[in-house]
Figure 1 (cartoon, rainbow, N blue to C red):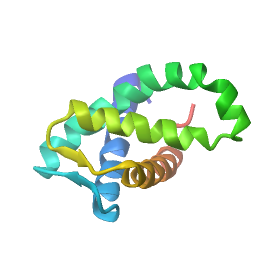
Figure 2 (cartoon, rainbow, N blue to C red):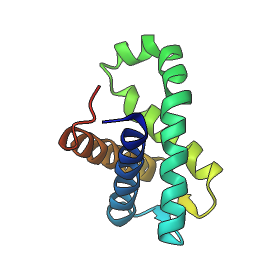
Figure 3 (tube, rainbow, N blue to C red):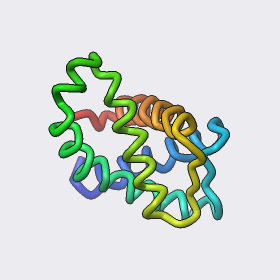
Figure 4 (spheres, rainbow, N blue to C red):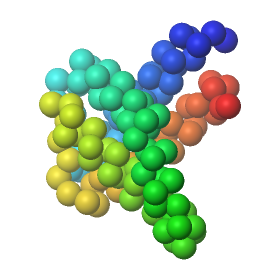
Length: 119
């Protein structure tokens, strides 16, 4: 599979994960669903690729101390940052961010595994 196809499939996985979180989590809302979903999926992918590794590295001692549970909070923070950058996506607090981050992570993991996109 070439790089462009892989990138499109990863974007599609993010879009589906965001859509599922929008449907399941009260307090996480995506308005103007399809255009906003595509933009949000792209922004979330970029943040996961660029910002998340830096934050995770800086917080590594605490990630180890909490046995990885801090990664859920880091994912929620990345999701919160995405809502600040993408108009049409709203998040109403810490717990909706945590639940949405958990759902997005699970859906992404399932889709990436099913599509054979794991590195």
